[in-house]
Amino acid sequence: MNTKIPIGIQKLRDMKKQVLIFSIRAYFNMLSWVAPSRAGREGFYLFCKPRRRAVKPHHMEFLDTAEKFLIIYDGKKIQGYRWGSGEKKLLLLHGWESHSYWWKSIVAKLSKEKYTIYSIDAPGHGLSEGSYNNIPYYSGLIEQVIQEQGGFFAVLGHSMGAFSTAYTLHRAPKLRVSNFVAMAAPGEAKEFVEFYKRAVGFSDRTMGAINKYFVEKLGHGPEYFSLREFAKNLKLPGLIIHDTKDPDAPYEHAVDAHRNWKASRMISTTGLGHNLKSVDLIKNVEEFLSEEIHQEINS
Image 1 (tube, one colour):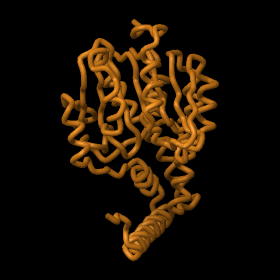
Image 2 (spheres, rainbow, N blue to C red; image 1 turned 135 degrees about the vertical axis):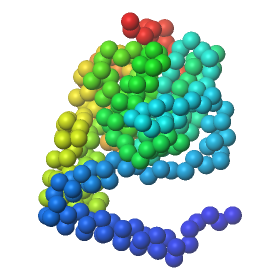
Image 3 (cartoon, one colour; image 1 turned 180 degrees about the vertical axis):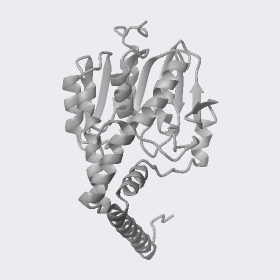
Image 4 (tube, rainbow, N blue to C red; image 1 turned 60 degrees about the vertical axis):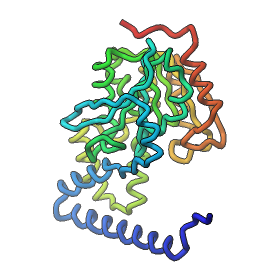
């Protein structure tokens, strides 16, 4: 069956997208002159608003194999999933505009007798409530889950989930986590802000207002959120997995993080892109978690 979108419909969608971007650009660039504080605040929250991707029936078929639970974070219900009953606890953290289904292949492969596997839908993602997320906000949820569960043998993060975990372990190094697998982690928050500026066409004045609110809200500018710098404070054993042609998270940032994270090793792939879907990589993760050199959660 031909599943291609007709050319006319695709052109119409592209036109609607262009009109929307033009409207957003015009609104914020004008607002930055008449109400710069408001432009900064609204621009910041626009940047932190993920598109909620649908949880489809085949996603739910997998997620229904888990024991479900809820976490209350910042007054919002956060959806959690749990598989297995093993002694070693794992926490799985998905990336931007994704949800817990992303981990299906890894959950299916790992032993449920050896591990108890937890996954959560980030705020504004999957079945969790909310419409707002960023690195510090996600980090606060990650810290809460780690503390409530008494620690984890390992945290596995993909994309923003990996970046937010690195930030969490950087700012709260005494959290009880023994190992960390970082998959396709972005390197520099400032690059996303710059991309955001170019994609929408915000003026320097508009971006100045947004950056000002960014600092007021988060305590730091975008340049502070750097995987390379966070990696300097990571002491636990780690595995970095990154594709050399990752279009969303430049490979060189992963190399820099590996260089600064003394207890890490790195696996480089080519052709797997940002999603890193590979049976071999699942085996690599499984082998890393099974190594006898790993110590249990630090007391």
